[in-house]
Image (cartoon, rainbow, N blue to C red; front, side):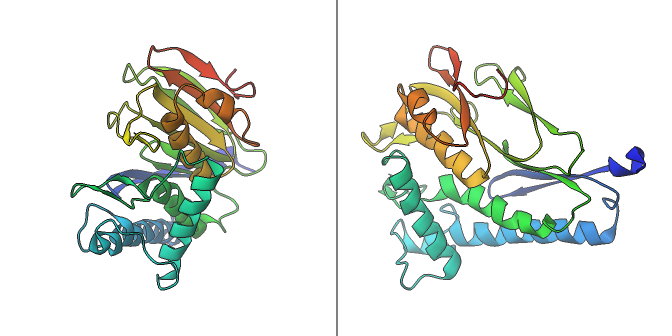
Length: 261
């Protein structure tokens, strides 16, 4: 196969869900209208998710609820799925990821599934590119990355940013498939709340998790920041996942199977 055709590239970037979301494709059809239409449908689905789940938009489904948790018995299927996933995430993280009592943009505390919705939405929307077998896919949602690469193709290179020095990389991973997600204080300050205290979690500056699925990589990274000092031991117990973290002193540590070590 002609490698210059195989590795033809195209990228799209759109601001949606309050962050930049980019789609990078490699493959023979990246310049075609058919591929562009699929990418636009992906972005359209993310806009639909934002219109439903944004806690910043008073007209969204969650905005109208004012912090109350939707009733799964009467909610639309996507809302019911997210509520059920939030409960599963709470169980899997020992309560360190808990969407039920988080600070709301309008003040007070209530149900805010944003820490799960991004990974869920990107993974769900990626199905619009799922039947392009000759194309490699890299979806980047505000630094959380979902990857797919065909057999015998070069992997994608993903940089892990130093939370204390913008533009400096702690590590660069070469990944063919799966997800890379980072949570921490570098971009948004200490915005992750420790459910045990109701106060911002400050023991860790950043946690990056690699795994097969973006939803769970993102949830586990967020839960690890909330967990604090013993996060690395907990992360090491998660089958199929590895992690790199930076604590409040700047010390960098990783689970034993971290791919960059």
